Length: 117
Image (cartoon, rainbow, N blue to C red; front, side, top):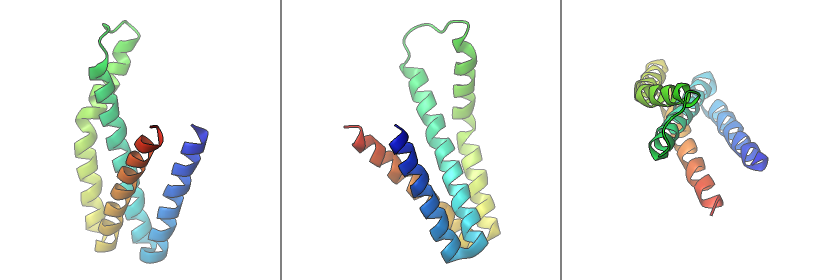
């Protein structure tokens, strides 16, 4: 698991470096926003999916975790849209790098899914 995390961090750092080299500070901001927004989106979606998959009744300790998963699932889209619109308002370079960050996170998600098989 540590190797996968190290690969993901290196992948994100490489993307941030390329965005900074190609787009300057606007590109770096856009890429960082894309990586953060899409990572949060994936984690919130996965939390919602896991919560739906649980068949056992929630105990007293599990209620707060369920509350956090549901809240994250409900606010993931507004956060994602807000960060995307902010990147677009900064510049077209930031918007393009935001989409690059989005693509990087989804490609990494698919790569991790394939690596687990």
